[in-house]
Image (cartoon, rainbow, N blue to C red; front, side, top):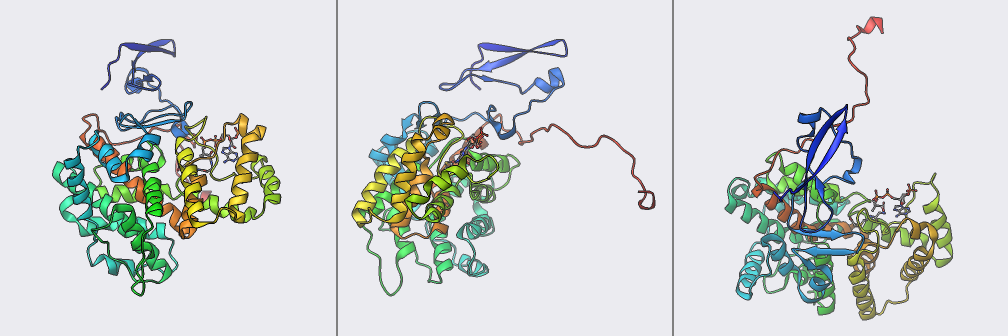
Length: 431
Ligand code: CMC
């Protein structure tokens, strides 16, 4: 627990309650209300947790006003520019950048766990041919607890470590299999001589009739997409993983819960929704119509890929993603298609429009990632599975941190009850 040298006083029902205040290493002070109900008989109310810290964490820090994202203190632009995904995975999981030998050992451990149990292939075949790959992933990742019994005991640190490595290693294989299944192509086994991103691209795009030669610029862009999505502190899916895990559930079940939460269009599903929106807009002349809809209070439509709960200046991931988009589109020679023209113009208009400026709605990471993934040849249905793949390390790191935290308690929020008060049951003939 952090030092509490400050305190806050709450006056309620003519009673003064002193509340400890924690000073974090970065970010605003945190008022500790853990004993508020015991001392004052009141709850707090904060829908969407806009002012509530649900846990202590030393993994990721975001300063939304500055547009800063730090993993273990290192800024995301430096990690995306100089590091690579598996090194960032190590950093998130163990807290420090690895020395060369430790990195080699970690990469070898991940690489040697990339294959999935052969019986899992049968499991895939139970899904309908047109199942969304996210639906398949929720099911198959959850089912890992049925295949890997020797890493489900959360009280054993070694089993936790094995589960973490298995998840990081196998989720790309599972995502690629979900894709292959959805397009009616045979599964492609992982290859241990390829790096993490190249292996994923090959598992998605290679077919028995023709191998897929991985372009290093594309695999670098893929790796960067993974890096930019690796963790994002206590977002909805991570909080879901933590809440599921607080009951002692096994790691595969917890990560499956995180995948289910990520799927929503306000969260990870936004990358698919964003590209579909750009396609629906279709041509630059239709942008004003969609901007008007986004501003209309009576229309539920929102500009996908814009806005963020925490970033109120810019999304630092979006900056790097935009550079990547330029590189990839340049390489593939598709700088001039209609979707891209709509994206460029939409961004320009939204950044100047008073509605978006006043509400601090900037393009987020999902605005550009879909453009790159589309250019690489992924269907929109694979965008969110790729986010899930990349975020697995974040979920796993936060899960490991939570289990090792002596303050761990089952998550059990209170409520502001607005229903009927006590009333006696009425027999059906008297209603
Ligand atoms: N288009 C139009 N208006 C918007 C948008 C948008 N994309 N986002 C927020 N607003 C408006 C909203 O209507 C509200 O207006 P008012 O104050 O008049 O009621 C105001 O801006 C604040 O919005 P909010 O919903 O209270 O903000 P939030 O912090 O609860 O929501 C968000 C954040 C990301 C869910 C939201 O901005 C959104 O729905 N964006 C589109 C979906 C999206 O791109 N999501 C990806 C987020 S980044 C990746 C990830 O974390 O998974």
